[in-house]
Length: 104
Image (tube, rainbow, N blue to C red; front, side, top):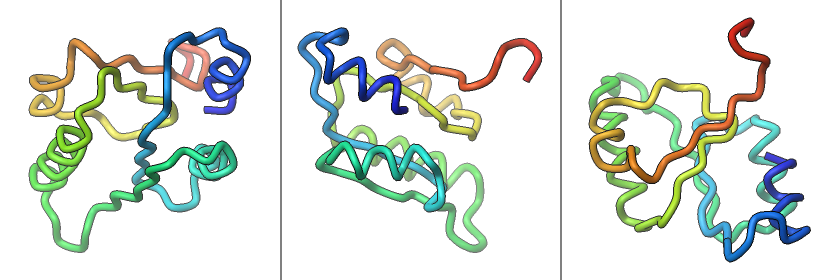
């Protein structure tokens, strides 16, 4: 997350504005970095007690759709994104993996 924020500040990612940061982990380092960067909309979408995976997936997809992003960047997101998400945002979503692949 920090690398992406730094690249945007240095102009390496042109014509971008971070408008939303979403995490399912209130303790994530990426969340702290988003707060430090003053991203205007920061949300924690933790699964609720007893909530099914399918219901959580719908909540997440609906939440993203409400913000109408031009581009979605998954950085540090550790959940598998569901088919319902990919059906709606697959062509505008990019994922950054924090570990060396394929080792981790």
